[in-house]
Amino acid sequence: MQNKVNQLIKKCKRGNQVAQMQIYDSYCNAMYNVALRYLKNEEDAKDVMQEGFLKAFLNIEYYEETATFGSWLKRIIINKCIDMIRKHQFDTKSLENENLHIVDDNDWQFESSITKEQIVKTIKQLPEKYRLVITLYLIEGYDHEEISQILDIAIKTSRTQLRRAKLQLQEQLKTQYNEARY
Figure 1 (cartoon, rainbow, N blue to C red):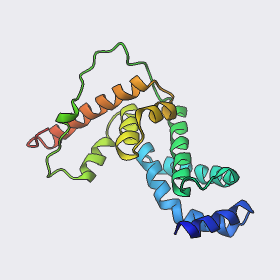
Figure 2 (figure 1 turned 90 degrees about the horizontal axis):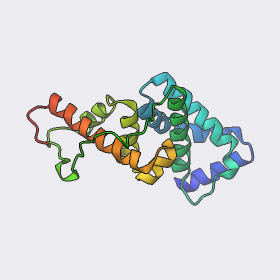
Figure 3 (figure 1 turned 45 degrees about the vertical axis):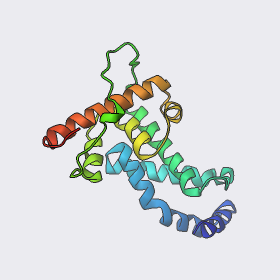
Figure 4 (figure 1 turned 135 degrees about the vertical axis):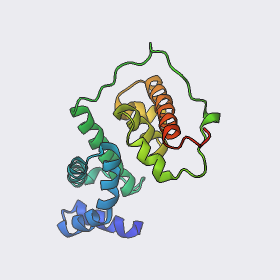
């Protein structure tokens, strides 16, 4: 698969629109789902996906095969999502002076009856700043240093927002599934 993608990318670098369409068809559903996870709005997710593909094709000569094309494209889509969120007044106030209840990772347990889909659905209900951090950390696998760079926040703020996101997620899941032990 990756070999075929690399051949298509070489064609894209030469301006081959058929190859661009094949790349688009291969990755559009996955990139739409990434955008939807961040934006929670189908139209915004479609717009960001289109803008992301456009940016990728305009800058494809900068793509290096040290990473997979899918991960390179996903990074572009995530950055476009974050740009859109910032444009819609993303509030990143400093959290350093606020009191904080730390969620101990040892307490981070879910009842086995709670599905991944239920957790993801509950994450989508979190406030935007918490949803972004917890999605980048738990679902996308970024560390706090990368999250701080992506969101342009301090590493400490990333950690704090993740703790608060976990706490809110647990509280919401407790409310929804009050028999579960957390």
